[in-house]
Image 1 (cartoon, rainbow, N blue to C red):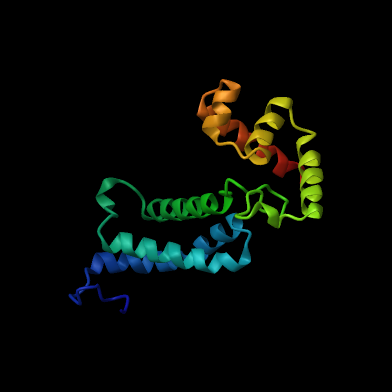
Image 2 (cartoon, rainbow, N blue to C red):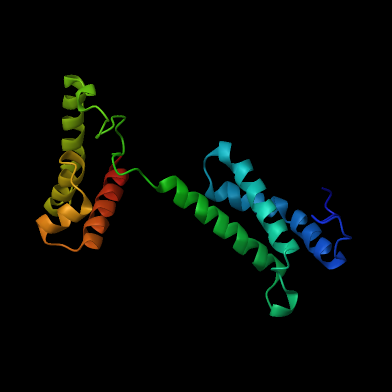
Length: 180
C-alpha cells in the first residue's frame, strides 16, 4: 500500500495525505523524543515505527480535525506521548512472584526445585533488601513474597484495605529498586 492509497483503493483525500506527509516530516523530531525517553536501544526503532503507524492510521481514520483548534504537531505529539507511556508502563510491571535483583522464582511449580544454596541465597538477599525499609513495609513484603499470601489475606491479617496493602507493596518495591 503506497502512501497515496487507502485500504479500499479509492483515491486518497488530498488533505489527509498532506497531513500524512507532514507527519513524516516530523519523524526526526519524534525519533528524538523516543530516544530521550526510551533507553533500550533495541526497542527504540520498533516504538518509533509503532508511533508512526498509529499516527497514520489515526489521521486516515479522520481523527484529526483541524477545525477543532488543535495544532497538528500537538495532535501528533499526543500520540507520541501516549505510545511512550504505554511502553513504559508495560516495561515496569513485574510479576507477583518476582523480586527485583533476584533470578530465583519465589513460587516455583515444584517447591523442591530450590536447592539449599538457592534458599540460603534467597534468605540473605531478601534480608539485605528488607533491612533499610520501615517495619510496616518489611512485614508486608515478608507476608507477600516469603509467606506467599494473597493481598486479601494480608489485608485481613494487618486490618488494612486491600488497596493500601497493594500501595505499600508497590512503594516498598520502588524503595528497593532505588537502593540498587
